[in-house]
Length: 523
Image (cartoon, rainbow, N blue to C red):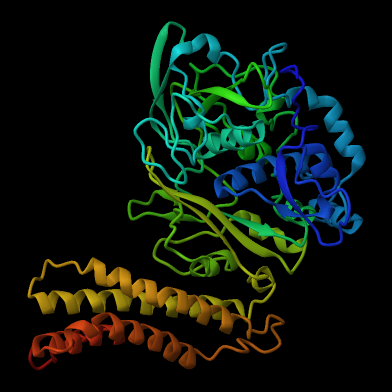
């Protein structure tokens, strides 16, 4: 196969799961054209790695905006235009064909003719040392490379298993959105060689997406209304640029939602095809995209918080934290919390598509530089009908249930740590082992308790907080915390010292001993 033939619009590279009503032509993978044309027949993407799923969704949101002409606020009412598309039940074939005719030539994975392979920089063959490429083990984020520890498999840099184009392209996207900061392959531009990259725009962050009954609903629900000043000929995706940007200059500032979705990468990559089988990738260049400056970090699918230093930052992905603990930050306009969380902007518009939308959280528990810990992938039942705009009388109950679950989780941690410290008579003892065991016992049961109560809520607003009894919920979460506490501390209660430590620390489950305030006479 000639290397210029593999086009991402045509070749089947995206794994999908078909809707139950589709009985024929259920291919495991589809190209971008069939994905858009048959989005109403596809239940969801079937991508195993959450960061790749999150990254591809952003590409698909941008393409959906283009083919539906929802990439500008006008003409007319943007929300009404989107509802017309929802009522039509499918994306416009004419819109897809028009976009395809204009930009299909920019979706080749390898493009030696024009030098514009999709989401890659062909200049790297000249600007990077040919004998110091990254290798495919570095490209595929689940593989060990160099001296790093193995995640899912062992591998050899000297004789790596070559990935398919599908696998390579999905990991190319992971690098664009979640790539690390720090040392990378050297790149020489204008006579100056450097080897330091800035972290990708989604690195460490947890991304939240509305999910519909079909991929068609999911893509339309994931769109955010552009500002009135946005113009599609200025709000460009990387494959729509006339020329590649100058690496020596500051990165271009995104001028609209499509650019924010697709053009915020801080890394430059180039895939190298295998000579014998171009459907495999033999090597890869991975380096920095811009020598100076950073693209402003902004994303409509993140929960944004404020630090004590008044800096804005996205809520980080935490593989130990269940999704229900973020639910009030997704449903409420002004969720509670000292970090002043702001819900993802996408949820201001998603309910217009359907009230039965679920939420899927996708991310990568990782540090800013090289350390990657664990993927994060979680989903809720249909919850967006409980958003504050839809159920103003009921949504606060969701927040209160979350707060109660969180409160008793924190109290449980304090209690077991205090019991351990009093038992060992070491105030510096951290009791982390007990705290981890207590958390493992409490949080799964607290999650089940939350969802069982959530299902009883009345979202019609006719009966405020129907199905929610605050006192009963408090008792339920306290009972779960107390059971976990008794189980974890049981091993030391056979001694008088241990029993006393456990008894004293149990008060932390109830808020601890309140400090006595001096009376006016005493003062």
